[in-house]
Amino acid sequence: MADKNIPYKIYLEESEMPQYWYNVRADMKNKPAPLLNPGTRQPMKPEELSGVFCDELIRQELDNDTREYPIPQAIRDFYKMYRPSPLVRAYCLEEKLQTPAKIYYKFEGNNTSGSHKLNSAIAQAYYAKKQGLRGVTTETGAGQWGTALSMACSYFGLDCKVFMVKVSYEQKPFRREVMRTYGASVTPSPSETTEVGRKILAAHPGTTGSLGCAISEAVEVATSTPGYRYVLGSVLNQVLLHQSVIGMETKLALDKYGVKPDIVIGCAGGGSNLGGLISPFMGEKLRGEADYRIIAVEPASCPSFTRGVYAYDFCDTGMVCPLAKMYTLGSGFIPAPNHAGGLRYHGMSPILSHLYADGYMEAVSVPQTKVFEAAEQFARVEGILPAPESSHAIRVAIDEALRCRETGEEKTIVFGLTGTGYFDMVAYEKFHDGTMDDYVPTDEELAKYRAALPRI
Ligand SMILES: *Cc1c(COP(=O)(O)O)cnc(C)c1O
Image 1 (cartoon, protein in one colour):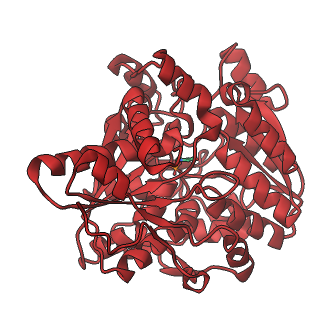
Image 2 (cartoon, rainbow, N blue to C red):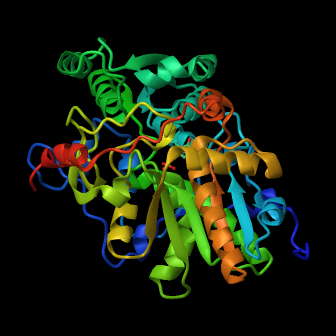
């Protein structure tokens, strides 16, 4: 079908790796709403955040204006071990689908952590080290962020304490062991080791945990241990900034061959890979230089964009973190323990939330089994075993390509293939055995958590 004058894999040279991260907020006329102090409900000042986060990361978090952040040499050197990552033309998938659409995916699973999360983990560890800290604490859901952070911390010689959502801790013992291999300590959350953990356990005995709980515990340990700060793998503005390296490389690779995407698709948990992938495209859209359809894909079991509300909410269950204005299901929302894995957070990146509210992007939600159907279809023709999270994007990329088959349109579709699924074989097993469920929260359930949103 397609004339194959574009290579299957578009590799960039090491020397072509972006020199700077791109801060999309600089091109937003309406800036995302500021973080609020949970006590005073006033915008957070840098000094109020300094007990929780590293100083440089606070600067990045609050900076709505600087367009370009040079990537420090030490981070670029680490990136060189696994970047630039390939942009792949999915000829085999196109052929299988008999679609005139042209499909590309940016593959971020080419490192041991198995996902894009390493791009921000190494940056955050670098700034912690530079500040002279002893270590960092964090939460991890499915385990990818904890793995990436353990790798980054061992590289810079930092201690790493990970609170892992209990259901994942039990379902994914191998993830845990990878983190321990890189020297991290891993505690199932909620735990008895923190005050907030004990409180949550008392209120919800037997809970399987959530990211919101694990964040509260990690923050408590960071703020009560000298020489420690807390780091977060998604949602925050600084994380989207670091992940812009994905989008910059994608755009550079496409530009090399004069390719302009029509549709850019990414899965959305807290929004970091999607925010990173789309940032240079969104920048052009915001500046009125080009137009793209941008689609966020989320699980029907945790539908922050499609069924949440745009409001100030707590970032954690223990309500100790700043309030962020975002699409949220309510910080009390604990998703069913199914396999949406890394897409189980109750909220969404404030930057993406704002862009979505302003109509710059779309969002769709997809049920679990449809996601795994797409994952399997993709694996069988493209070879890569995708992470379940990434497969949300595959689902919608396939749906759009099939639509092109109906209409005959030769659209160019780019999606983010955020990682590999080797640690998710229990989920694949359930899918193959026909025991995977498509749990979707009811309106009543969502209303209950929405009613508990802070009034601001
Ligand atoms: C964590 C993760 C995601 C979702 O996180 P975002 O911050 O929304 O990008 C997606 N895919 C993989 C493989 C992940 O590990």
